[in-house]
Image (cartoon, rainbow, N blue to C red; front, side):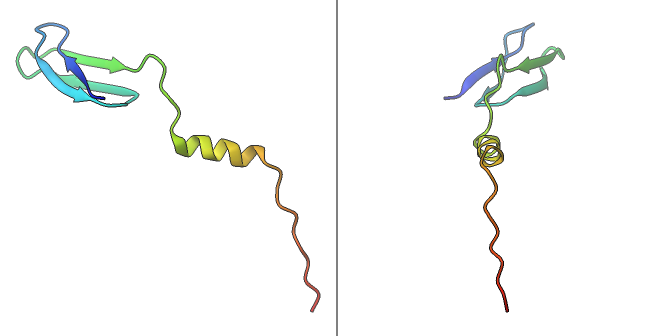
Length: 66
C-alpha cells in the first residue's frame, strides 16, 4: 500500500511511497528539505534467507577415492 509523503511546511504532495527505509526530498513549491525515515525498517527477504543459511550447520563433505 502506498502512503502519501507531504511537505512538512506547505503540505504539498511530494511522493507516494511504498516500503523504504529513508527518503530525502526537496519541495518544489516552498524549497523545504523533507527527510522521512521508517519507524522500524523491516528486514528484506534476502537478509532473512542469509540469516537462516548462516544458522544452519555446514553440509558434510564427501571424499571420493580415485
